[in-house]
Length: 309
Image 1 (cartoon, rainbow, N blue to C red):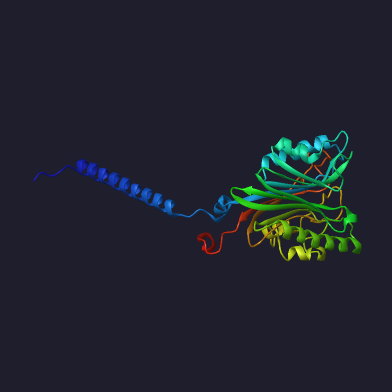
Image 2: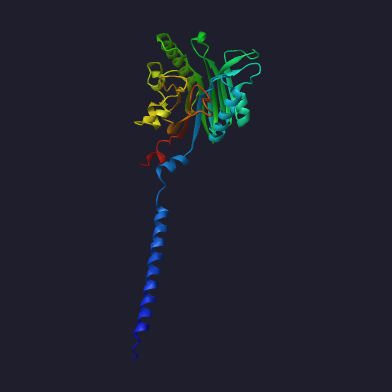
């Protein structure tokens, strides 16, 4: 039997070592691919992909303080967000000022509903509006009680990828005294009655400037039926104490602009404040900040998604 020389034995050992290392590396790569194939996506990614809708509410501060400049800032942000629906308050139209909701809707390519106590044809009209990029299934409007306060609510039922959703926009009484609280309570009761008569079986989202904190007694009847989207997302978070009144105009922080949602049909997944920075030195989009939220359709009871821990 011939005996290999020491250099030959070393070469064979080196080759065997390289082959073994290659095999081990291949096995590890295959195992990694298999693990990746079965690793579930993080919950946040699943939630983001789940069916739902987004909404914005924003008090426009009508045409004060250089509306032509402000509207460009507002339009740019709304174009970036592309919300399914937008609730606007303090919308005005008058000579030399085109209806602000109509202007934004045209620039965005949205449909819109403007409601006002001022009759069509009057030289100046002031009210609330809803804008949407979704097909509109139904439209309604209502003058809230007490009639002498001249407050309205707009309603659209929209089709969100085959799911009808009711969206409402309103603006309640602004007084901070006991009389204002009483009037808001009456307006909330009338708002809820209007919703009950128009919503049908589709889920409900209500947005606007309520001129009251979310836990105020004025809104208790509303809160008994609907969730606060911003507060639901930012539970036990310092963001829960933010203001929607622009601190450049108001001393005390106060979150009075809200997006409420039907909790048995929708889940609040994200929420943030908009227009809370000046767009130029000392210039702001409004005397209010806006609110944006993303809502997810709640899974039907008994569906796999509903039973997944």
